[in-house]
Length: 150
Image (tube, rainbow, N blue to C red):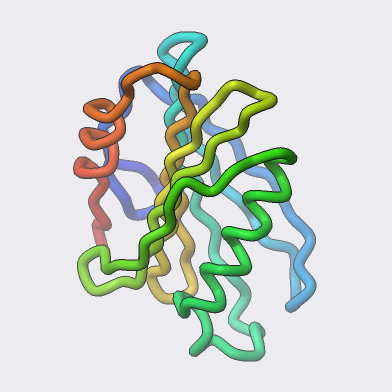
């Protein structure tokens, strides 16, 4: 399925789309565009994209290890008593990427996340599933189906 955010991805069900505005410390508010597919109570697939403001002081830092480390720390704080299973930097096409796997014990959920920086646009591919569920094939299919259209 092709989306307005210049990407294509396979999702198990037609996603619910929403847009929210988040305050930014680096300039104007940032719009977050979300596409959420939840085929059942044990799995959820999400793509979020947002365009970071051009006024960001250090655009060279976008996609750097320090940038991804900061996002990863925020993710762990959001989870509460979350545990980092692994974190790996890589490339998606020619774009910097980080893949992260968290476990949220209190929520009995696992979160598998890819963050991709394409210029000032940040994509987040997120799969959340019940702890103990083998979602490796679904996650792999979801991640491998993601394409940038620009």
